[in-house]
Image (cartoon, rainbow, N blue to C red; front, side):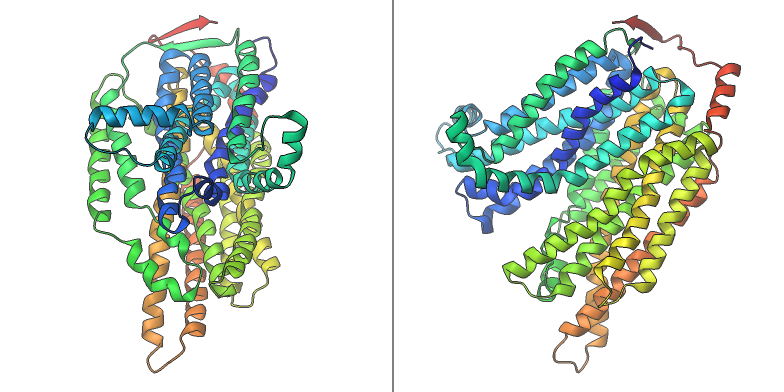
Length: 560
C-alpha cells in the first residue's frame, strides 16, 4: 500500500491505458489518408496498409499475455514505466517513419541484398509505419494488465471491484472513440492546419500529429507516474521467465489471428459483392494456420503444466470463481462481436448501392448504431462494480448476461427490412449495458482468486480471453453469414431473375439468426456465472479477517 490516494494513482495509470486503447482503432479512420499522403494507389496498397491495424491488434494481444508475468517477476512499477516508454517510442517511430527509420531500412536492405534495388521510399515508409505500430502495441498491450494488477496491489481485497470496473470502462471507451477521434482530428487539421502553421510556425498538422500528441501525453504521464508510484510496495517473484511458453502462445495467437483474418468481409457493402467476398473469406492457408494454432496451444498447455515457473499457473483454474469467470469472459467477447458484425452487415446491405456516397452514409449510420452498443458498455462498467460490492460476482454477472440475452432476443424477433434505426439502437443499448455490467465482477473474481505473485498473469488472462472470444467470433460469424446467405438465396432464387430484393430478405433472416445466437451465448455465460460465489464487500472483509492475503515464500517485497 501507499500513503498516496490509490484513486489518484489509478487515475494517472489510466491515462496511457486510454490513449493506447484509442490507438487500437484510430488508424481505421485515417488509413486512406495515410496511403494517399504516401502517394500510393488506394486500390492496390490499402490492403497492405491494413496491417497497421492487424499488426497493432496482434502485438497488443501478445504483449498482454507475457507482460503480466513480467510484472509478477520484476515489479509492476518498472514494467509499467518500460511499457509506457515503449509505447512512446513507437509513437515517435510512426510520426517520423519517413525520416531516419526509412534510412535505416535502406541501409539494412543493401547490407543483405547488395545487388538488389530497395523498395521505393513510399513503400519503405509504409513498412516502417507498420513496424512503429507494432512497437506501439507492445507497450500499449502491457499497460492494461499491469494496471489491473496494480489495482490488486494498492486497493484492499474488498474494494477492488470499482477500480477494476473503471479500468474496464476506460479501456472500452478508448477503442470505442478511436474511430471518431481519428476522423474528427484529421478533418480539424485540414480546416485549421494553416492557422496553426501561421501562429506557431511548426508546419501544417496532419495524421502524424496524432502520434506526436501520444508522445506529449506520455511524457507528462511518465513524470507523474514515476512520482506517484514511489512508495508502492513492489512484490517480485523469484524464478525464471517461461520463454518456451511465451513462444508457443505467441505462435498460437499469430496463427489464430491470421488464419481467422476476415478483413475481406469488410468490403461487403452491396448485394452484388457477396459472392466475391465469400470466395475471399476462405483461402488455402486458413486450415493449416488454424491447425497449427491448436497444436501450438496444446503444446503451450503441456509446457505450462510441467515447468516450475509457468507463464500462467494453470492451477488457478481450480480456484473458486476462476473457471466460470474465464468461460463467461470468452462468451462476453463472442457476444460483443455478434453485435459488431450484425449491425454493419444489415445496414450496409439495406441501404443498397455501391457508389461512394451511399457507402459513406452506411458507414456513418453503422458507426452511430455501434456507438449505441459500445457507449452503454463503457458506462455500465461502473454500476456493475457497485452492484458487485453489494450483491456479489454471481448476481451482477447473471444480471448483465441476462440483460444482454434480453436485448439480443428483442432484436432477433423484431429486426426486419424496414425496422427503424432508433429501435435497433435502443435494443443494442440493452445489449451493451448488459455486457458492461459483467466487466467488473469477472475481472475482480479472477484477481481476488490469484495469489499476490500471480496477479499480473491473472489480469493478462482475463483480458486475453475476451480478445480470443472476439477473434473467434469475428471470422466464424462473418464466414457463416456469407455462406448462409448464399445458400438461402440459391435455394429460393429458382426462376427468379432479379434476386436483389430476395438477397436483402435473406440477409435480414441471417442477421436475426446471429442475434439469436447472441442470446444463446449470453445465456450460456449466465449458466457459467451461476457457479460463481462471494464478492460482496461483506464477504471479502470477512474472508480477509479469517485468511488475510499474505506473500508467498517465493516473493520478495521491495519498497521503491
